[in-house]
Length: 183
Image: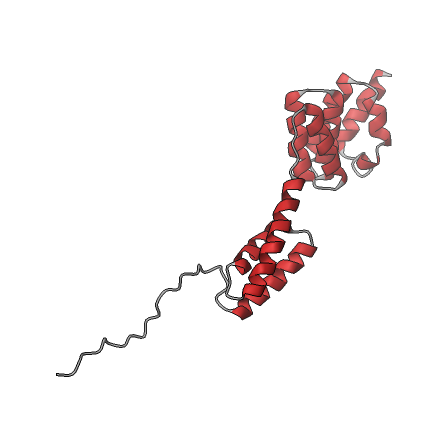
């Protein structure tokens, strides 16, 4: 009696690698090259994720290089973490973000500074970030608070280059004209 052979199937057996991991050297190489582009563009989080995928791939040479770059990404990302503790820390960070035109992040930081210590310059800085982001109505609210707390902020407003494009906005005009009524 001949031995029975197991039936041949066309179904593929699942691989142990996840979908996002390279399954062949060509994919691994492509992902490594993309990771290097991201690394040099300082998009370290995206590069780190790709290097991790490459490190799990079949080519030991690429995997070694990817692990090396993965460690560099992690070290640089650790250094980038900023620890903010005081209202002044949040204020200064918010100013730096505003200058870089990272306005959404700046707004969050400046709002936190206001929660911790409500000063005229915190209101003014938040107004600048809001105005640059196109939210002139809310910026005017914070400008008004800054001016009530420190009337010299009205002079600063008139001469501030960050507000030059918004000085004709009705909400800003109302703040500027309220001083004329007091004169």
